[in-house]
Image 1 (cartoon, rainbow, N blue to C red):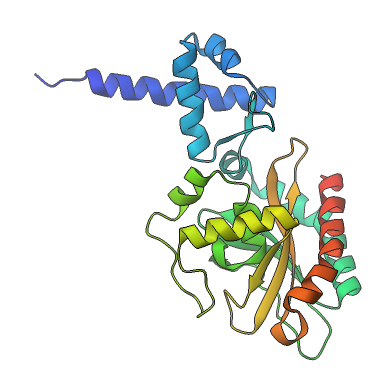
Image 2: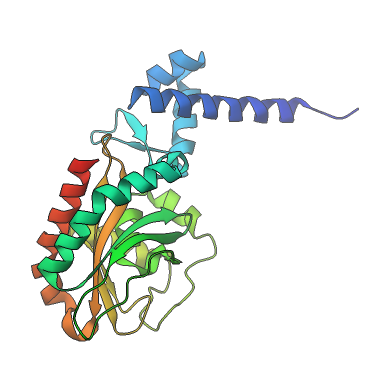
Length: 253
């Protein structure tokens, strides 16, 4: 006679996880005790459940660590075609403004699993320019916008996103997840992400995250330029403009 106790336990855990996510979406943020009371389970069980969801990026802890809010993986699942159209509508004027302010190509990206997906872009009018890549999927660890989004993930969620490591796109692509984690820490400290020839040789970029009304990082805005025209020094000068565009899109959402 087959033993179904393990199956029953697994089904119960999945059901509790789904109920937690639905509850969290409705509340905006919750404490361990809130989830415990809502599910009718022990606080240790609720804590273990939230920790598992956090490791996979479905929830994240607010500063201070007592409350949990929806994470980037949950935001990605909730995003619909209409959401993306609304995001493009709000972002397009800022992409155009940023293109004019920097004279460089601008892009709007979201996370799609391990990749960045280019939702929209506005191309520079300079003779030597980077083409916009709307519709392309590129590994997120090799784009400035992807890094801006990955920097919001917990270390556990980051490693789970790349269980087999990082495939090189150019000689400058980061070699492994440890190097990526260090790069993302530097991104958080300075307030913007950099792509230095990491997805395409001789192309560099700057990326800043865009947040929704709950504070979740749901997209990123970037500028992309030939390496001969960007570099770290100019990137530092242009980063406040990229941040300003991101803040305006956030306000529009």
